[in-house]
Image 1: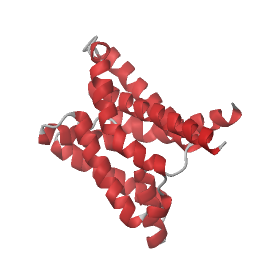
Image 2 (image 1 turned 120 degrees about the horizontal axis):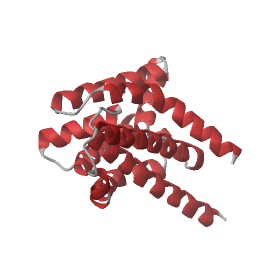
Image 3 (image 1 turned 30 degrees about the vertical axis):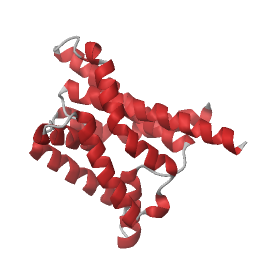
Length: 200
């Protein structure tokens, strides 16, 4: 029974990791701005000449090491698995979907890509929350800092996201109207998909 449960969780993590990879590719190809992590990944990719996936892998390894130091109790094996595989997933999806992602440079198509990225982020995060143990590295770090400082999780998470977005922008990542939409809509979308999963 436990073994079957493990394989179900592994499948969920694998699917959600690929979904996040696809979301990141959609965000960056849309060029309208995106969430803080995608902006940082894009900025590091531009600044250092890395592939988008390599940039994401570097960020996630850094966050994972930080989480081990300050928030170990909030980390599950799925956190580690996701952090290690998200970078290769981004590069794989970018290669596989390249013909689709480059179908058009029109603004209408860029908004379709952005909307697809937004929906993929919301649904994949909800899937992880509903089905897998452990938090994302960002949430684990934010939770630990909030506990130690006695302040709001929301304030800490917004501060981390703001720092990532500013740093990514300074390195060459795109911040735009899409960033505003992502900030406003990502949380409610995750909540919606998580509640939808409960009903199912």
